[in-house]
Image 1 (tube, helix red, strand yellow):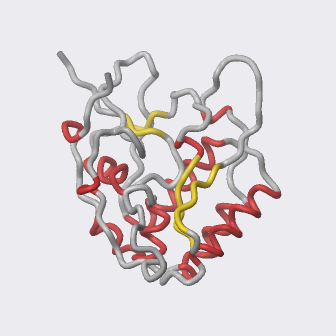
Image 2 (cartoon, one colour):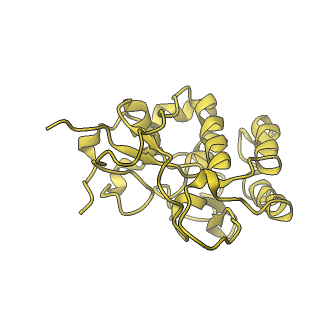
Length: 209
């Protein structure tokens, strides 16, 4: 039986384990998946002075059949400004914030019109800093899917989630590094964040079902 490469979900600022799979090279990006409400496809975690915060990328409500992310419109304008302000408040003191702020501000305030476009933009931003290529788009969805890699429920232990020096570690001793995405790691470590990412083959993940 031929085993097709596993697919990575299209999501914003995915965690280091996602990038470990991308670095391995045999995964593809599941761009055909229908958008799922209240899932990590439009959510990401940041660490604030008050603790971890789950941020949502608001999308327009549209009835009818489920749509892939590239057809799911984002809510822009005030929502984008609030999201950027949250990033500035959370990470303004981080070592690489000033260097990365112009790119991030443009990403948050001038991002794509659809959820898919915006998520792709976050992946490309991280890819440029990490020098790790974003996986190619998966073939049409009728091919069998072996496994997926997400942020929660993927069968990975916290031992695969490295820690790094953090601006809020003096206030919080239980920083959930396993939830924080590549945005947090890059703002603290810059390109050195690549050293935390180890290639993870498809066999390293628990198959669904």
